[in-house]
Length: 134
Image (tube, rainbow, N blue to C red; front, top):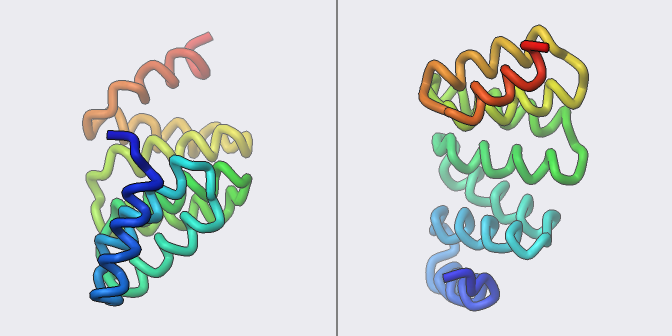
């Protein structure tokens, strides 16, 4: 419903009730990211990871947020961990490929984008055509 402030308040209450509720940290962190509170978002997503290390989506979300603050090395590390947890994560391959494009690691970026396409990310095909089929 795009009421991110309301969502943050609700997730904060859930965390007060159960400080080990990883999903509340994950969702609060995602909501903070929508409000461009990137540091708060990364903090909450990191807490969610500390509670549940095996959630590839949290690593991908934190990687995207790190990319927004130009922590490209951190973003690649998070996307790589998301892929380790879920080797078929089209989202993680797509986003890692995008960061590698920013860093001009074109060959490696292309490999990630091909994998993203293989696992069903249609945006990856568009990026490949735009940047590699000149």
